[in-house]
Length: 93
Image (cartoon, rainbow, N blue to C red; front, side):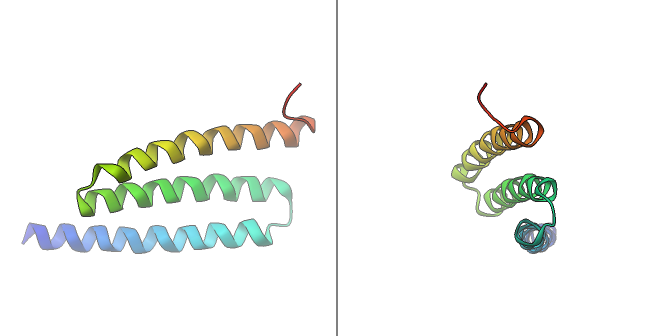
């Protein structure tokens, strides 16, 4: 019984995270300002990272956890670089 509930919960989480990623992608395309697009990109990488973690739990594969770590690091660096670019107009001083 508990395996069925866990499978259902992980399937629902995957669906909800995929929907959130689609909505963040829509905000990236339609965002009225650059700040909205950066925030949507931050939301998108976080959502995709969580989607990888849920998929890794469902399949029992370590590969997805390692990919989630790479996405987290690259997303953080990209967010910091874009924020610095929006604030100062240049990334490298």
